[in-house]
Length: 415
Image (cartoon, rainbow, N blue to C red; front, side):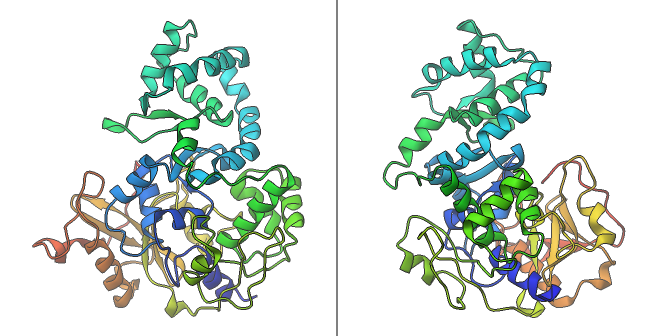
């Protein structure tokens, strides 16, 4: 498959080209999970994949209402996932994350016996309390005889351990960005009407592979390496997952996978398929998309840690090698980017109440059509505490972006 065709099809799989998702849940499910250690970045990732999603509060409501869950999964990092997927994803990644974090927990004084005592106390502390400040949880554990150093990283590592055990989830950010926690059982209860998706063992691995192909395909000859890089699974487990799916080296799978609507309804929102067939496990079909030309790939502003930059071992299909270190300067940070023609063409960040664009090849390199599209996108961003940008039609709306002639240093914080 030609590189331009591979790129175009992956953009459609990612919902960055072609028909957008119908809502918050559809967007999250399509890519399995959205990295969410930065809540504002997670909101932007959802917004880039939907139409008509004008306020960050839509994502907040989906989390507060139990449609979504926020917990540590792929690569041991915080992700936003469908609440219906919480149990089977935790069953896959929880043991890996608990094992992977053991040495650091022990360095922080959170040996497994201490952590297990804390887990036993957490349901009694958190039941019915709603989202609780993490610091308050640590204080209440101390009152019950489980003492964790509240001043360093130990509380964060204990909470991640409890999430890996399926006891709690990260809740919404509180005032000042303070982290909160909530019982996983309460997330499950909020989701009771639709029920959880139940996959175990090989069936769970096969479902993970199916969903990965749908959101990140087509795969190339390094499909197992890509799945391993995105998920954090050992390479042997990634290969097995794809073997269970029966995936070919380059399947063209990219149908939305929302579990709430009948299959016929989901297919109506999907890109036009080329001969869809049932998935190997009889679940939602996955189907290929017609190839798109670069002109069909709209210019977009992507937030930090966008999933299109995290889904493959090799980012060359979307980021030129000469720009790779500008996008990922190290320390795990992935910058906010400009996507033009399906490729990263620069960076952006907020500059006061404007958005400052930094095309890699200078201001004149950004096509007028792309700049107009990006400015139009910014004008639809409503003002809020997270998005202090002009409302459409306001006096400031026509001056809401600027192109900088000089390089910007990498932003010190995600958004």
